[in-house]
Length: 411
Image (cartoon, rainbow, N blue to C red; front, side, top):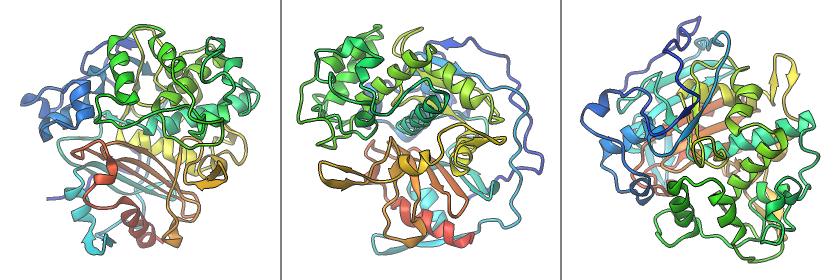
């Protein structure tokens, strides 16, 4: 039975567990109830989509067991999330021509956590599959959108000069390779022109080769692999989704800021947004490069607080964190090779089939992770899921129609 858990007027007590070391290697950060009967899967098993349901949940709750992580430190008082006056009730919607409701969405799509924030307040909050308010759930590629936001922050701070800077300005080791003439804008748009196969379940794909290198945990391995790739076309001429390129963005940020990616996230956002818990973020090796494309671990509410920053156009206590108009650019389609592509700067514009989605965009991750942002409706929806396969397109029920139904119900 669906059991909604709502925040009290003053939020919850801040995270009070003893502080852990900043670098953690394969050590689960507190085992939940599901761990009593299952142990986390290995990384190859995850990308194969070959996990029993209980194993999958435990793995997603303890992503720090897959790769070394660096802690993203919170700071100061927790920012309360008040209870909205109008609470979300059951909402009907259509998916692929069939009628469903909120309960179907939660059950069929194996949702572990659902948070709806309207006008900055909690309209709905629910945990399933053994997850709870303190569960750190893996972001998968939602981390790309966090990295995108850090790029905006680095531009605002003057640490980066322009999106049109060549990657080699910050990563000279890329000179002479496929990325020699590629700009930061190109990789932010997945339009470098470098050949790449992202298929998660294909053991011969570039993404799986990159996974093998990640598992070796050798400093510099990822950069060397990316530099060995070949061209498929000129920069800006081809759209081709590549997680590998977001690792390059992370490495560029570390070079430009002279700080580990997790530290920069902490100082720029996590310590200033009143987060409830520290987050974790995968690194290439102990003390190594951060993974700009995946591997953030955070609680449902803290993902929601990040979403509120985006929904409020990147302003914290009156201070602009990213350039004005950044999220409008980052969340909008762009023309690549003469064609409009529904991809921004590491954010996904929501397909405009329903007018309610006008201007909306989202961070997404495999296995059904979403942070939906609708600035016009002042709405943030966070979905954390444990769907059976990496390809989220294989979800039983479509996500955009559900998000549209929620938006309309709260108007």
